[in-house]
Length: 92
Image 1: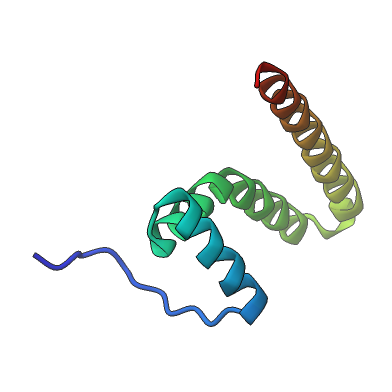
Image 2 (image 1 turned 180 degrees about the vertical axis):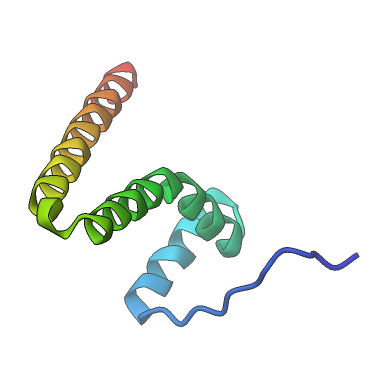
């Protein structure tokens, strides 16, 4: 039975396509599944970007403060993820 989920046609640069092909080959995961998984993992970040943009549009006077707060939150999140990744690498 065909899927009822929306489809998106993507055109990607050759180097990105090659990278995805290599990841797909090494992991044994279809390229489309890799892309969907990556987008799903990135979804919380997209939601934060959307929220910040909506806030800045609604309150143009406070836009610089909203942008600064957003950037600080992203930096904290990235720092935490690097720390988590380092812990995992140490276990290897």
